[in-house]
Image (cartoon, rainbow, N blue to C red; front, side, top):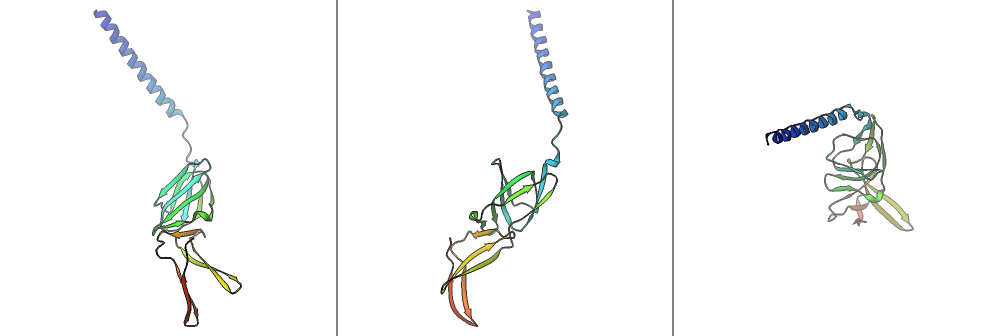
Length: 173
């Protein structure tokens, strides 16, 4: 009985030693693998203000999301599509304006102009005796934004000299 018990202890001890050696060997092998170089990362400098959320989508479909990003963000090198921009004050990039392709190169800094300051613009088209006015809110890179508060649409007034001759508000959409 004693020898059976001693054999079980030796077997258990041997098994523990083998498992420890395997674990140590695995750790040693991982330590010998070359690390991915930092050059596979690139930087994106944001030239714009008041960005609350920025979403960039890679070609493989993976989305990189940045909440309250700083002036410079670091991300894996590759090609990205500017998918979403949300600014403070409930302004969002109009998805109808298309997506901008951004190439982030390893070890380099690229510039993305997006966000505030926002500039209200009006495009005027003449159709006979009618003037068609179109309102857009443009960001730092010329991208179009819409406001989150639709209860107060933008307004305009037309003056002839000092006299107001017409005023109205823009319709959303």
